[in-house]
Amino acid sequence: MWGRRRHRPGPSGCSAEELRARRREREAALRKARRQEQLVSKRLLREDTAVEEGGQDGAEIVLDPLSEDEVLELLRGVQRGSEDRKRSLSHLHWALQNKETQQKFVRLDGSVRTLIGLFTSNLADLQMEAARCLHELSHSSDPAVAEACLPVTPYLLTYLSGHSVEFTELCLYTLGNLVVESEAVRKQLLPQGIIPVLASCIQSPHEAVLEGLGYVLSQLLQAKEAPAEIIPLVLDSVLPQHMLRLACSGLKAGIGAAVEFAWCLHYIVCSHTANTVLLSLGALPALTSLLLDLASEIPQEAPEGLELLVCPVLRCLSNLLTEETSYEVQIQDERLLITLFLILQCFFQQHPFIVQECLWLLNNLTADEPFFCSALLSLDLLPALLQLLPCSQMASVLVLTVLCNIAEKGPAYCQQLHQQAALPLLLPTLTLPDPEVVGQCLELLHLLFLHCPEAAADFIRQGGHQALEQHQSTPQLQERARALLDMVVQPLGASTFSPCHPTLSAFP
Image 1 (cartoon, one colour):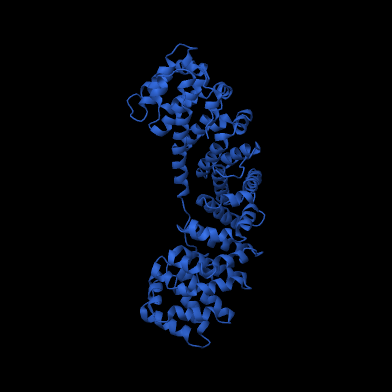
Image 2 (tube, rainbow, N blue to C red; image 1 turned 135 degrees about the vertical axis):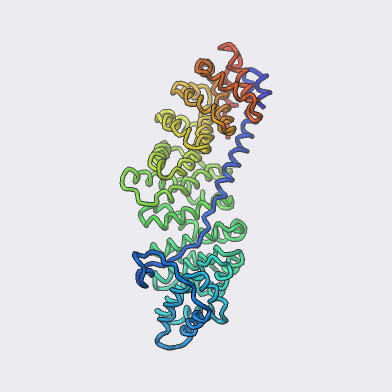
């Protein structure tokens, strides 16, 4: 491509279709890499057990495994209908925090059946202790231990409508841990009606219940079979509108629930199966408004863990903007740019991963829409953007891609990039050893030189010629480097520097 361009001076030398194709391939690869990041994990609710049973400040205590005889004696104590049953059950709960004890317990005939019997009893104290024992087993790293709990799943679903918030929360996290375990567990839960049950439970007024429900949903939505088997069931329920409502409640209803449901929305968006539904529910303006609200909290005392909410919201907006649907996807609010740079400033030091997320959204905002390209320049945000060039390899690529988005809009935009001293910061980028970063920088220079002859002249005066020459021997870069060298050695004002026709400068 660069070779053909090198031999075709003037407007005909810029192949917009080829540039579009290459950008599509590169951005598809980046998007795929981001979507592969999953948050499948098990969670354990132990509350203040360690303190109550003799621990120090809730610190985790490593327990020695019980012998098989000791485990059997505990089971018999639980099975006997004596007054000591609750004490035996509490001791069993404590002992099941050890992996070896868990394995020995589930191997005993009737052990899990006994726990399920107590879990379904009408004695509240015994029911809660049995639930804690089952929860410990569900959290086991041994699949055989967790799978032994499969018979309890229909009862867990039944008790999600219970009267006790603590008991309901415990059932939810036990259910979530079992969902993580295997596809067989999830296939068992779907016909048992987990989606309708969760749809009813999501209207609970209790934050702890909502957060636990969000955990169960997030584990379901990350399953490999989710796009075909789980998400369609979710869409046929009231869950999407409530997930959007709870995610956008932000800090009002407690950050824990908002975080869980924001990640749920992210997993749905990444599945490409429900984005039209989400867009029709107003997801784009709602999430944009949420991001603006979150940014307004940053200069004050932002709560701990705010970055865990900001991250999925950024991802949802980024990916929704790339959707090719009949539903009109458009945001035109320059406050969104200010918000992105406020978030960058806040999280840059402690949570650098947020930088990449912000830049990805900025890239998708500027890819098609001249509005955001103009706003970025008029709001004088370019210097702050250029400061992010050395952050990381991915940040460098995305910053340069955003600059390409701006340069593609034509001569006026390139003039402003040149006037705001972009070139001096690009020269050090050309000396980096990373071919992807340097390649993106060469693409930006090509656009600048086509639209702004003065930029090419200044580039030579600042020593850019030598920077290009060093890449003539790099296989991935040599063709583009030579093409640029041919451009910059032309006399100032030659046709090589003539700007491309405006209709060829826009990229999707």
